[in-house]
Length: 187
Image (cartoon, rainbow, N blue to C red; front, side, top):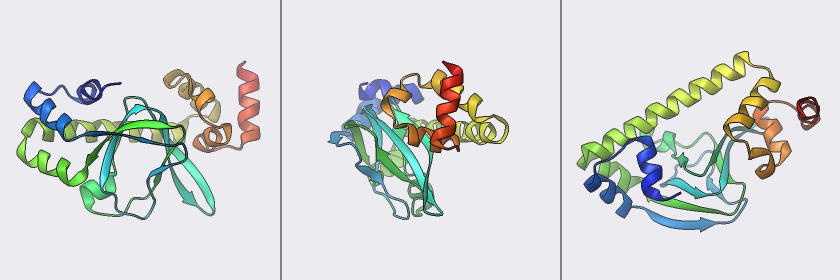
């Protein structure tokens, strides 16, 4: 996806603001297994995914728990650092070789202060992320792993081909053996 489409998928910016934001972004490539963010660190950059897939995970009791996948067109923002100046609570890992658009957080903050349209774009993205987080929280409270798996396949149909099953199982909060059983029933 190109950067204009990604930005405008959140909130359509006037052309001048879109160009201002786009000029602040650079294209970068990183290999599979590269970590964009690390848990317990303040981060300095945000990303837009042009090509690739990522996961967000946290370490709990010696176990990695995946709670989000991002793919083409998604944004990766270190919210703890950006909004509260705190260290991140999760790590972001590339699950494929990826091409990203990168923006410095200081530059982004400056744009929020100088361009109301870009500030509104950032607010819309934060609102969208809050809604998605709430939906995921509710799903984890009321849906079975089978329902969550079916929903994941509907929203991200190629996820099983692109993400190792152990990571998908972690996202669903089940073992890889349980995921295999669910997959066998659905086929």
